[in-house]
Amino acid sequence: MRLFQERGYDKTTMRAIAKEAGVSVGNAYYYFAGKEHLIQGFYDRIAAEHQAAVRPVLDQETDLEARLAGVLRCWLDIAAPYHEFAAQFFKNAADPDSPLSPFSAESEHAREAAISVHREVLSGSKSKVPEELREILPELMWLSQMGLVLYWVFDRSPDRARSYRLAVRGARLTTRGVALARFRVLRPLVREVHELFTDFLPGMTRTEPGGAKPDGEPDPA
Amino acid sequence: MRLFQERGYDKTTMRAIAKEAGVSVGNAYYYFAGKEHLIQGFYDRIAAEHQAAVRPVLDQETDLEARLAGVLRCWLDIAAPYHEFAAQFFKNAADPDSPLSPFSAESEHAREAAISVHREVLSGSKSKVPEELREILPELMWLSQMGLVLYWVFDRSPDRARSYRLAVRGARLTTRGVALARFRVLRPLVREVHELFTDFLPGMTRTEPGGAKPDGEPDPA
Image (tube, rainbow over all chains, first blue to last red; front, top):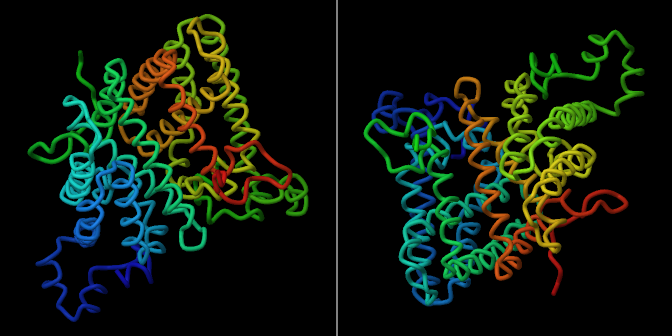
């Protein structure tokens, strides 16, 4: 991570990484097939740290808005040391077809960990969620977290104060959305938004053998 | 534009642009204060071409979904020659604080032109739109167009076929959303989504003297 931060992702070679780690290049490749796999390791570490950090919030809060705001704040806390790297790394991760994208098949492990946090945000809250949206909402909540991440990447306010405020506002908005989902008339719209994302973002579909869906082709129906 | 496409935005100097245009550097600076202003000229040109190209659709269609799909398809047609440039230029434009961002104060002219197209998409359709959302919806429709643009930037499908399909799907979804806005219970949510964008995206607020709002600080209330 330090090399990536100092030299930039594009200019950092596996050779340099191996040297810095005091291992042979062959040995480095034994553990990581390439530097994009090192990034996956980084994603997994962030996800694991986040899962640990949210325990106090998820164990104590029952209010959906407080749970979600707490989870988003935790993410900002944990990601803080990597802000500079994230800004320069962004152009690699923003391409949904790149293995480095949070939507890629390769990122599935970290993504699943992150979505499972949102599943618990919802299931442990005292908010009533219609059965038919219980699978879908955590993925949409994670998508809105990706919106926050995008905002944070470009946030130059001191200590990312604006991102923290956006986390609070986003949590409030999501909570209102969930409350409105009790109205039957709205549910088809929620499902359609979710379908649009699963059809058009490669890694959002259930992983099939061979990785991501080759095309975002919706059903011919 | 050709120089930007060949050398990349970052590596193209005003000196090189002046030389290519057969004018002195001083003369180039007389018309454009810097290369970011050339990009604004490019944005304005795309917006003007788009406004012209949507006339047949807006003059003939009265169905909201068909109007919106037509307008989005027109944009993809017009932007096609710049796809390669857009991909490499993206990292400059994705930063909401950059003058090159579609959300910046500097981009206001092109943004206003684009939003006015959506205003007409809505006003010329036979769909009923509640008075209180008439100002807000065109901005949200333009925001969703920015989502399509982001998708298009990374679309590597032949002839951007996936982006064209997303345009159709997005138009359908937006139309359903507008239809649901007749339910009073939903309107506060629409307003809150809009408020969130205006509070946190610099150029989304009404332009004040001196340019964009310095911070996305929401009202202390």
